[in-house]
Image (cartoon, rainbow, N blue to C red):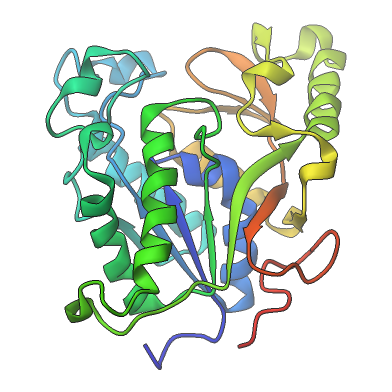
Amino acid sequence: MSDLPARRLLLVHAHPDDETINNGATMATYAASGAHVTLVTCTLGEEGEVIPPELAHLAADRDDALGPYRVGELAAAMRALGVADHRFLGGAGRFRDSGMMGAPQNERPDSFWRAEPDDAAGYLVEVIREVRPQVLITYDPEGGYGHPDHIQAHRVAMRAADLAADPAFRPELGAAHAIAKIYWNRIPLSVIEEGIARLRAAGKESPFPEIASTEDVPGVVDDADITAAIDGSAHSAAKTAAMRAHATQIAVDGPFFALSNDLGQPLLSTEYYQLVRGTAGAAREDDLFAGVAL
């Protein structure tokens, strides 16, 4: 669309809250700079575990009302990050949260895990051809930690990037568009080790009963695999506010957070990536649009 800003960033995530944990500071940084940031979330996160006891009734095995509630949490998080363009793949509720790998929910016919990747990718192609992003962020092939919806989000995002560039694929969705650069979410081993050490050093002041190990954190790789680092420290307060907005899923205490497993982790304001398609602008980029013709 000709009226969109010159720089356009697309993120594809599995559930509400994944975007803020992985990319909140990056999203806020680019939104504040005037770039157009588009978030596509693939499910409502209906199968998530609920942290606050007063909201436990929302869970899938009780009222099964968590999905719509998380839609509101996501909207609040996006307001905190300054992101106006956030969508659900195929519309809210098109694909249901599949639960953890091996759970019975994997077999639901409406689960995202059961979706045919090319069919699901068609909905994302429509977004890509409308917004025409130069940069895409998604998960690695293991989805960071093996969740079926994260794996499927990776498959759908990568397939949609290919299909969107093919003029023979559903021309009624708009003119073909090739994404210049694709990044996977990553965390360098040294960074998470340092963050965990800070949490352990807090000792009795640590807000969480247990502390994560490097094996508990998705997307940890050797430092040498990192090709980009976005310093979002100027927007750390926005990321923290967005994390707090996802209150059913995340507990935040100062520079640390935990999910329903109560494993404390550092809340990172610099976020890290691995370039998997496209040409790097430098050995270690500090701008995801480096080298992109605008």
